[in-house]
Figure 1 (tube, rainbow, N blue to C red):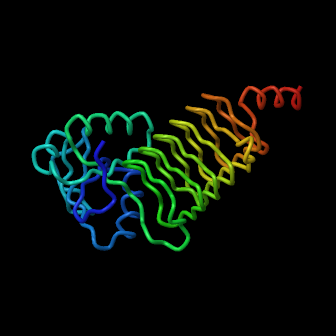
Figure 2 (cartoon, rainbow, N blue to C red; figure 1 turned 90 degrees about the vertical axis):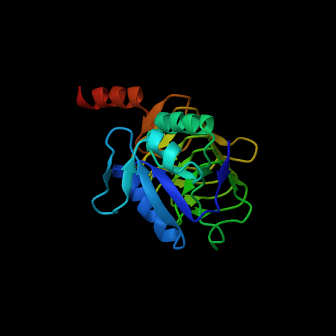
Length: 229
């Protein structure tokens, strides 16, 4: 999978909602870059009303901008992986959305192809961010692994010795507490961590947890019944 974090001109997959929010933040951090087009396979064939650049289909991207790197900003983790697979099959280059050289980012951070990391995120040592991951967190403390195509929401925090699986969704303002060197806290593949949740123990693959302390939804429903019977 071809990728680059060094580019001037680029295109973005996504023309609405979260994609526009991410794209605007990234462009502010890259003053010497130029966004050439937005890709939207649902609605296209017009100029974006505020950005004044074309909104195009994936097919048109391959025809008109085959050599420009593509920043994939879709919030849905499954869609993001599917777009990556299509772009790879077309020989496209992925744009890796990072801001290098910032004093609050450890220089040893490992970035996967096509990942995105907000310019304000503080990142400590021994952190790996997987392919296509989307990191809008405030903090990745140290000894953290973020799996491929996972999302870390705005103002979330991940403390030390944490392993986050693939396709995990961590909602805004959630806190993932410390694990240990010998027993890291693990968020399993496909898990969902709710808004403002405080996760103090490992989360099973596919589980949905919320609250403080974070618990699976069936446990919260059971507690609700106990309190209201």
